[in-house]
Structure formats: C-alpha cells, structure tokens
Length: 167
Image (cartoon, rainbow, N blue to C red; front, side, top):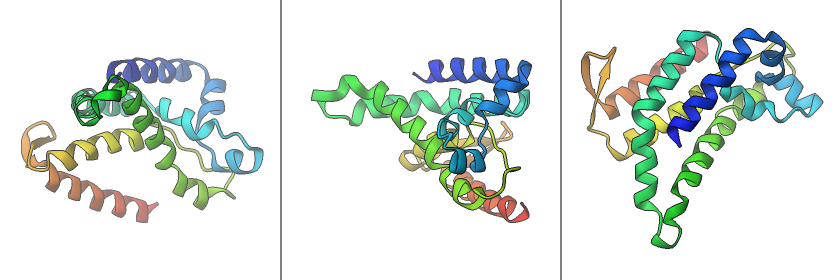
C-alpha cells in the first residue's frame, strides 16, 4: 500500500506541476473549504506538493517508514480481520491528511489567500507511529548523524513549533 500511495501522490503532484488549474482545484484553501464547501480539498491537498524537493523528501520518508508501519498493522490486528491491514493503514494515512489540516482550517477559514499542499501531515503521522513503537531505533539526521527516534521526534516537534510561530 505504501508504494501505491507513493505512486499516486507522485503522479498527481507531477500532473499538477504541469497543470496549474488542477493544482488550484486540489490545494488546501480553508476559505474555499469552509465557505464554498469544497471539502475534497481537505484530502486532495495531501497528494500535491509545492515542488520536486518537497515531493522527493515526503516520498522518501514514506518509502523508508511506511512499510514498517504497514507491517505493524498486519501484526496488531486480530486474526479475524488481519487481512484488512492494508485498508487500515490506508485509512490511517488518509485520516492523518485530514486531521493534520483541521487546525489550519479553523485558524485560516477567513483568509482567502491561505493555501497549503503536501503529504507532510500524513508522512509525519507515519514517522511518529514508527517512533512511538520503536523509540530507540536510530534515525539518521541528514542521512549521516545517528539519533534515537524519540530524540529526533522531540527535535522535530520543537522545530515545527518554532517555525509555526514565525509564520
């Protein structure tokens, strides 16, 4: 399922790179969602990216951590519904896109100029799911500096908080 998500996210992002109208119809815009009831944007923005680097970073993180999370779902589900683990993983990912955008929806609903794109909310959910169940697993900061996952997660939260305060 991870590879299917990567494929479709990449495909939709690349198509939107070439078709500005598609990009505009799918991006997160709280004003459009709230006042024009374009609720599809709550999900569709998670399949768009601002540029190639944004797409590459999100898809690499998903590529490295998604299969572990997907496999974990296959182990934790009861035997009677274990065959649904891919669906549960997909639901987790899609809900993470939506839930990660709800605060922005609330805060920016009156701002017609606020737009956002990217799978960062869902990819962060996958990464933090991994960190939650394997907190001491080494993650490589910039690909070279080994840091325990729990430390990396805390640093990421501090960085995100700091950047959100900067606007």
